[in-house]
Image (tube, rainbow, N blue to C red; front, side, top):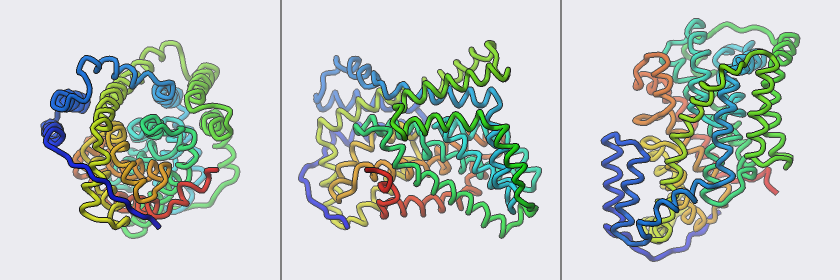
Length: 434
């Protein structure tokens, strides 16, 4: 299936030293953008690959991208959806769709996460918005609080896996790939993860009997819920329909989506001018976390590319093994460990340029590589010590992070099965591409 070619470069302490310093700073809990900034300055100082005087210009040019405008717009769209109550209507539609089966509330909760992912593009927003609504209902239905929290945290990982995903916008920018192309490629893998989480919850329910009630599907109830959620459904239809049809770029679709959401909110009187300052503040806070990381991480990625670190990494790994299957498993291990200790954005900007040459050496298509990488990194959202979604749900429920993480183990294993399937079956990522 794959063939491997050998490169010939060596890594030195001018690279190992800054990398080790960054690891130490991460362990000490220093903010990630500070870690990346200090590590980059140290690397540039030791190697002279780029004058330090160009740092400011390079940082600005790194985030001066039309594609990145979509990030704050998708974040704001998600915030508008929550403020107007449209997110609750999406959940009611999900419950009308699958809530009638055994373990239906848990299943519809995960499906609701998938619906919201089609709008927000952010897993943390997904976890926070839906966790507040669904966890109390899950507990009333019979789910233990730690398991209910783990279920929502796992379902919310689809926020970066189902288009439109901020992570795919960022990896597309980093590797020079159209975000629209990545969105098309990610549709089936994202849905596959969603279905796998649903099936895992169903299986656990069968064993533990958390939720045993069941009913019958009501076409009238479904039609009522669909009509009630018609405006909420319209927004992902505009986003994905516009992108897949070629009418909009992701950035244009994000702007149309946020405008549509605001108009709907004002027209239905679920949104007032008084809501705007707080919505804008929340969205700015989240974007203020993402943008500095992207700028600094892109600077570090440029420095690593100038030092030919990707080629050196290929040599280091191929010196260890020339087996393509082992190389894929090594890449997976790197992504899983990185996802456990660092946020997705810096992982993508730093690791994607490093790992893509290695993937291409064994014949992996770059689109396939992007889907594989983002999905693997998504596992880190429910895996300690970082486990961002675990911390979000812990903050909402008061449950210890480790208690939630313990109940998330089956979902971690299920997601790993999907990641391995995506890694070794390229067709799942590439079938919809021309």
